[in-house]
Image 1 (cartoon, rainbow, N blue to C red):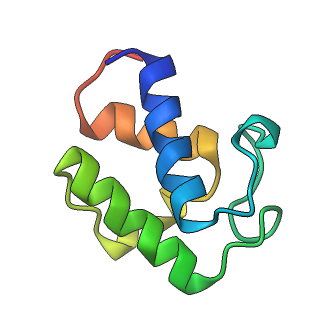
Image 2: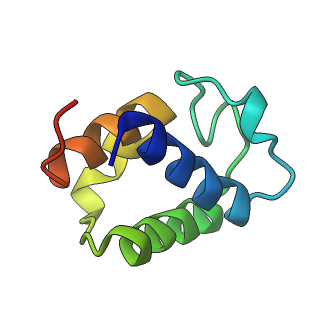
Length: 84
């Protein structure tokens, strides 16, 4: 999986739980809750979607590592053992 593929998958899951967001306008440093307006349920739904897509357990202690797209992609890259 390339970094582009991973970002695309992340944005697909993000826009599935928050369909009012436009994937093309989401910046890598946009905070999911503060800048993009995800509430806690949206965030938990995103965590669940990422878990289902990647088969990756995401413990609550790691939630801050998903705060922005850039942080989430770095986290997923690390946890999936992809070179980044």
